[in-house]
Figure 1 (cartoon, rainbow, N blue to C red):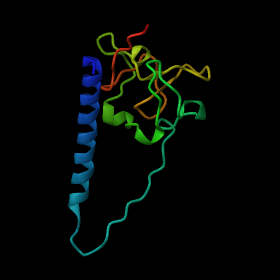
Figure 2: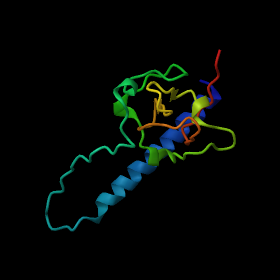
Figure 3: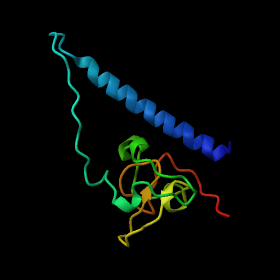
Figure 4: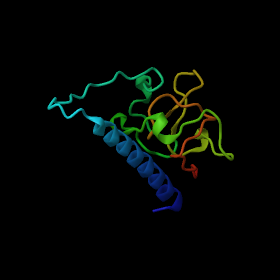
Length: 128
């Protein structure tokens, strides 16, 4: 396994663990009154959804997007500007613009993605 993939996987794992801990701790505030907590689905905001053309598209690095296995933008510290020259448009997980709106998507992050954005799942694309 390449170093960059390992690093990306570690970063994603840490992000997911942090989310799991937050969710777990959020449930610890129960009232103890014998009430059963129920989980409700939350609606996906426009920033988290993607057009149909991106739902299972393949990234520039050959990774197919699985809409059931993507991280929320907040979980990967998504930001709309590059970080030290690293940006989504040169990440192996980036899915290029398919509808001429200037935005793409990501194989591992939910929502539409700006080409010059950045997140901790970044893994440099090593093109042919």
